[in-house]
Length: 244
Image (cartoon, rainbow, N blue to C red):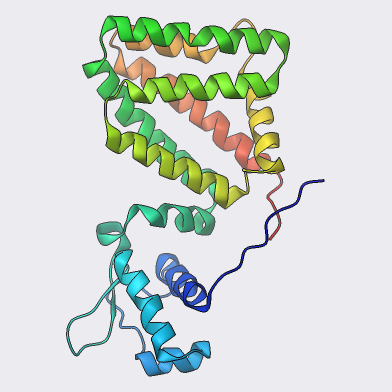
C-alpha cells in the first residue's frame, strides 16, 4: 500500500499560494495593483499580520513590489521571478510541456558547455558510464536501469562545469517530482514506461550521444537530446496523474 503524506499548510502559505496562482495564471496581470491589506484580510478571513506575511513571501519571490505609501503592484514574473516559481508553474501549466521546455533548455546549454570544456579523457570516462546501463537493460532490471541512467546524466552535467546549470537541474527535477507526484508510485510507473519506450539491448541512445560529444558535434548531440526529451514528454503525458 502506498501512503501519501498529509500536507499541512499554514494560513499565510495558503494565501501566498492563492495569490501566486492568480499572478502566474494571468488573472492578476503584471502592473495590476493588489487590493489593500484590509480588503485582502477580509477576503481571506485572516488578520492583516497574516496577510502581510503572505505579501512579503510574494515579494521575495519577485512577484510583487511595493513603494512607500502605495499598494503592492504585480511584477512580470518572467523578468523578476525566482527559481522557486518553477514548481508552481509546472503544476499550473501542464507537467509534460513545462518539463520538456525546461529539460530541453538545460540539456542544450549543457551540450554547448561540455563540447567546449570537456577533455577527451572526460568524455572517455563518460562513455564507460554506459556499461552499467547496458548490463541492467540486458537483465531487464528496470530499477537498475533507472539508477545507472541517472548516474550517466549526472556525470554528463558535471562535465559542463557549471554549478548554475546543475542547480537548475536540481530545481527542475524536484519541481517535476512534486508537480507529478513522481516521488511515489507515479514516478516508478513513469520511469518504467520511459525505459520500455526508449531502451533496448542493441540500441542505447547514450552511445550516440557520447559519440557526438567526442566529435564535438553540437548539432548531432542536440538531436539526440531532442528525441529523448520528446519521448520523455510523451510518456509523462500518457501516465495517469496522481490524485489530490
